[in-house]
Structure formats: C-alpha cells, structure tokens
Image 1 (tube, helix red, strand yellow):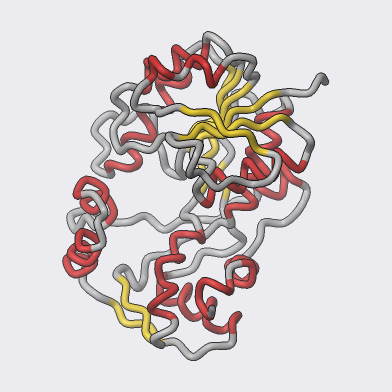
Image 2 (tube, one colour):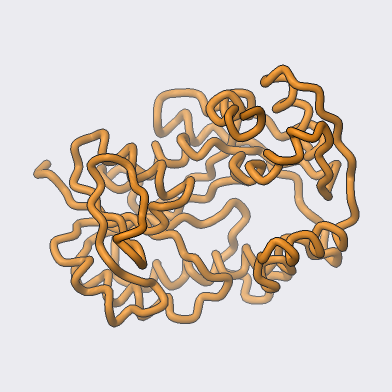
Length: 283
C-alpha cells in the first residue's frame, strides 16, 4: 500500500498524542490539527497544521492530501459535527472516531450526556459517506492523572468508591487506532477496548500505590464535593455535570478481548499504566 497521510485531532493530549506517536513510528506521514502550531508540543516526526473543529470552514488546507482522520470530538454536543464531516469527506476516505464504551446511536434520550453525544457523533459519522471505524474504549487509565498531587500527600479523595471501571491504557487504544487508520480489516466495526480487569475507584488507588511502592489511602467524597472541586479547577459546568451527575446509576464496565484480538497482544493492566506514568505520582 502506498504511504498514507493521516490527520490526527487531539494530538497535543494524552490519547491523540499516543496515536500520533505510534503512527509516526510506522513511517506514516502524520499531521496534527492544532489551534496554534507555534505553541504545540508534539511527538517527533509529526507535522502541525492549523485548524479548529469549531470552525469547519477553515479545515480545508489541513485536509488536502489526507487519506484518513483520527477524530476526537472536543465538545459535549454534536452541533457542527455534520459540517466537519462534510469537509473531511471532500478529501479523506476514512474516519476513525474515538467514541466510548456504552455509546448507543439508536437512543436519542440517553440520560448520560457523554454517551448521548457519542451516540449522536457515531450516527453522523455513519451518514457521512466515509469509511468508518468507531473505537469504543472503556474509562481511560489516564483519568487518574489528576490524582498525582494527592498521591504525594498520601491521601486520594475522590467519589464513586465502588464503581467498577475496566481501565484501558491509551497505548492499547492507539495501537488499535493505528490498525484502523492504515488497514482495511476493521472498517465498519465498533471494537470495545478495555483493560484486562475491572477495578473500583478504591481498588485503582490501591493498585497504583502498590505498583509504585508508596503508602496512600483512599477517602470517598460526595459527588457534590467533587463537582465543586472540579469547578474551582476551571472545568466547564457542562462537563462537571456530566462527570458528577447524582441522578443516575453507573453500569459496571465488563472487560473484552478486542485489544488482544486486533493487536495480537494482551491489553495492558493498570499496573502497567502506573509504571509507565510513575513520574506523575512520585516525581
């Protein structure tokens, strides 16, 4: 297959950065869509192109010559997604969309706002005329990065003590994304990507602490307290409301074997992830 050019959105973040890094490692031409190319820090071998998903009319230059797009939608609403996909479809043949485990495109009144917008985006992608792959990861292990400062105090305070999550390493999601972008065998599929075990919040703290050899205890806090802390940290209200809603039940996240089936290697554990990011917690 001729060398391809891939456009990666969200490449300055943990997940998009992992995709860009792994793509560049294959020798693929990688472009990262960023708002400000002068300030973006990206993996070696990745070219920056200016663009903003909230302004689809300005995306054309970034997409010229692009074969496929790794799409991370940065908003909690699907408004504007159709316009963005129309621009993508004028240039690329495929989009790999980072959705979420539990997304249901056929449910328009889902009371989970995060799963609702992912379902709406999946529907928009399907209607775009592009080849597509919907990646449906479970909760990212990187969601625990915010615990770093608390780990250094010896106490982690967080809500949802007994909520089981099948934490997935961003490197495993990126490995599947690379396959989906470069090869044809995943087109039209929705792989569900998880780690090898489902752990409650209390267990996650314990596992990370044990792996890093530090003494840390966990204290559960009310969702109202967590929401107040998040707002004080500058997190937008709509995201705070989605993350810390108290009027719905969280479904446990079961594990799947999709990562291993696609990549040929067992999914990384939270212990693996903690070792890869140790400097955040003990640095």
